[in-house]
Image 1 (cartoon, rainbow, N blue to C red):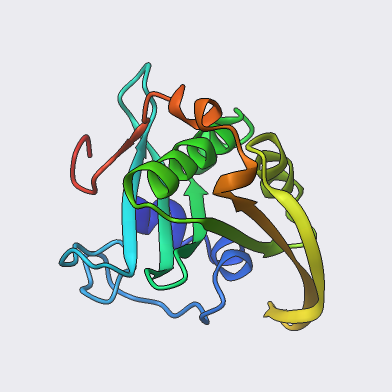
Image 2: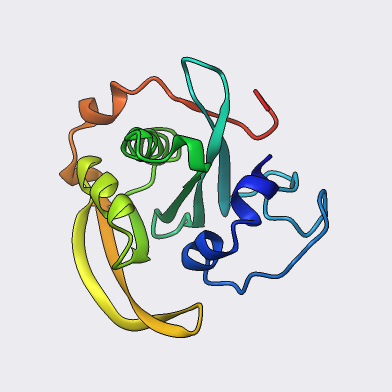
Length: 175
């Protein structure tokens, strides 16, 4: 489902990933959604809509640095689930997981300056704009600006993130 709905959406995937899009057959072990062994550097989740139980997308903490206690945040929603404010809820749950479960200190999002949906979701979840990287991403034949947003554990209310009932499930559950 994620291969077809997310990876094969070439335009959206190219805007969301710094790696070049390459065609791959369904079920390929090279798919970013192929099952992998647990890792200290990545925590991947399926996003499941609570009311329907439908798979809505994927979320992850990546580049987890246990020494500096920081990680990058990413998420992707399938087209039918976009525009429903799920992303800010998912970011809140990822913050709770990163700060409370993993003991991280800082979370960071890098997104295209034109990605208003992610920028709005991140702000609603408490992330602060920290800077703009001019022409730092090569996307579909052009250099475009990226925005860096951050959230630091000491600057956020623990109750803000503990109120979330996790809509995230480990990959494979609920698919």
